[in-house]
Amino acid sequence: MPAEKNKRGTEKYEGTEKYEGTEMKIMILGSGGREHAILKKLSENKNIKKFYVLPGNAGMQDLAECVDIRATDLEGVCSFAKEKKIDFAVVTPDDPLAIGMVDRLEAIGVPCFGPDQKAARIESSKIFSKTLMVKYGIPTASFRKFENESEAMTYVQNISCPTVIKADGLALGKGVYIAQNREEACRAVRELMEEKKFGNSGMKILVEEYLTGPEVSVLSFTDGSTLIPMISSMDHKRIGDGDTGPNTGGMGAIAPNPYYTKEIAQECMEKIFLPTIRAMKEEGCPFCGCLYFGLMLTKDGPRVIEYNCRFGDPETQAVLPLLKSDLFSIMEAVRNGNLAEVPVEFSEDHSCCVVMASGGYPGNYEKGKVIRFGSGKETVYHAGTGKTESGEIVTAGGRVLGVTAVRHTAEEARKASYDAVGEISFEGACYRHDIGTK
Ligand code: AMP
Ligand code: GLY
Image 1 (cartoon, rainbow, N blue to C red):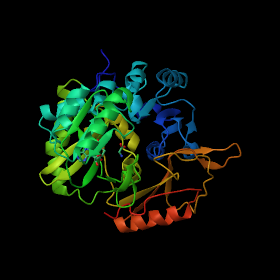
Image 2: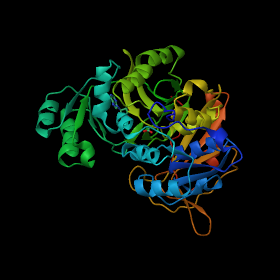
Image 3: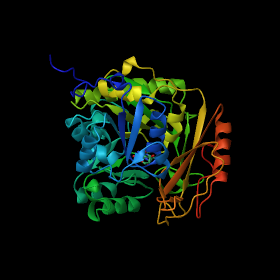
């Protein structure tokens, strides 16, 4: 009898029962706060005996063995997985997904949580995702695509502003320009297409209608047919209080998002979420994993600003602490195509995650500053941290920590999170003071 296939066409994986009493080994790829939050939640499952994180960070060492292999090292990751007989892999950062890490691991028999390369295009190519939305009537900003610089220039010289210019490919979250006037629009086109600021990612560009309204992030679990949204959340992308200054990887998040009412959730499910997974299936690339919807609630209704093919950062650090169900069972079901059969429940509480960053971020910053932790009452997710030879935890990146508190109300969560931030210090530490006050 042929082995049973899951929705992606790979062989069915038998589930954790098979491992009861054995040493089940899980591998997580990545090194950010998001991966720390995933590790912490997965570690609640007592059937899992061993976690490896590649490459991980200083905060994960209590729960996992961190291995110095880059998440994008296809050969390195696959040979490690084979050598250690990894039972299940969780692939969360955008770049390994875009280069087909899941395809490679599945091909050598390692079941993965995360989309394959074809499905990951929903994030790795904005032209792919915009074309998909237009074809399937999913509401989004209108747009034009350009592969030729002089055509793009002619177009933006006559456009009404503000307008939005985006690189087609991945650009560390920095490939989006909001141009207030035509001059800025021309400069953006030049930076992307002529100066190739983001390399090949900007060879093709989109010029998009400028939308306004509150932004909402909705992460969801999907096995390609069933989609279960997680609790909504709100990112804070700018470095400065009051949404000022340059964009960052995200300076904090709250969950749930106060703008996301039950009615809007219902509308998004009908007009955006389900049509998207149906569209991906129709296109021959069903999406299995965490599908992230970046939405804007405009006066004409919700619009998709972007899709991510993975958990968001720092949204994950606010959303996963509210998950009551077993994350590993959900991930397994996503992988096996039976998500409809497992419980996915969230608490009614509120969470607030405040990111502490190195002074100077998102520009240049120094590393190696010793971090002093507080009483440890709230959860501190590590992102850019390292350990010195003497065992001191030091800063090692732009975003350093994500401090999350969970309480019955948003206000209590915010206060508890800031109280905990106040107890932590390192030279040059900076953070926003207004996470969750909008
Ligand atoms: P993205 O990387 O696509 O999420 O874009 C980064 C940020 O740019 C978003 O979170 C929005 O704040 C803003 N943005 C992107 N597209 C648009 C748009 N069409 N209209 C207004 N703002 C946008
Ligand atoms: N918080 C948005 C992202 O992860 O790209």
